Length: 288
Image (cartoon, rainbow, N blue to C red; front, side, top):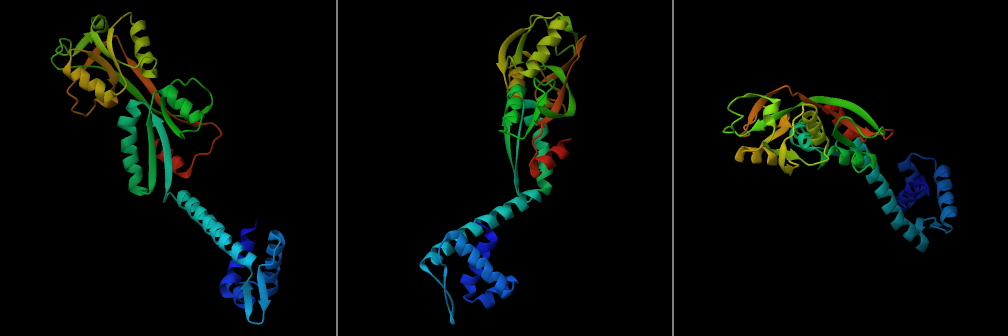
């Protein structure tokens, strides 16, 4: 049903005469009369009783009037919501990332973004890179921050930053007193590792294997905060993102490891060929 016809019908129902309604709509009387005829043909019923006193709604006309107001109001509300999203007065950004991204990249970016766009809401999911890829692919989220390389070519990829992975220990750990150790010195020490199968865990395990070192992983955690807390209160070591310790009072000491350099690339991904919402497009531009 044409909303233009419904709006014309509602104007006549409100003003009770073709003359006043046509003036309010900026139409000629014949044009408005024709619209009423088209609407009556469409619904298959007479909507007005016409007399010298004006236009009175028939029983069918009252039914159409009630429903037309609902339809027009809903359409108007939809227009306003679309307009608000396009101007970033409102909107939702759905983004996912690993522990590093969600803890140390995304919060600061959201704070900066909401200074200019306080009406935009955020749905943030913390998960491993492979799970984030799946969420972007299946459109549960629009944006993902993941560790490179990707497992699929279904994404548009923007490199975000290069992240160094560092060794941390409690200040009273024997290795912490030396500040710089050889990679071979790590053999046999107890470690807190990230979850097996996670992208960062695979990166760390590969680097240690290539250096010919086997470590004793006694605990597996997902959260950087939990890992740092565990290291600070036990004699365990851990490899974590430098983003999680630089400039922060974490209760741990960063140890330089001779013969071992672990870096990873973090990237922002979105599903290839899928247009981003205005809010997600603006937030991705800020991140990049």
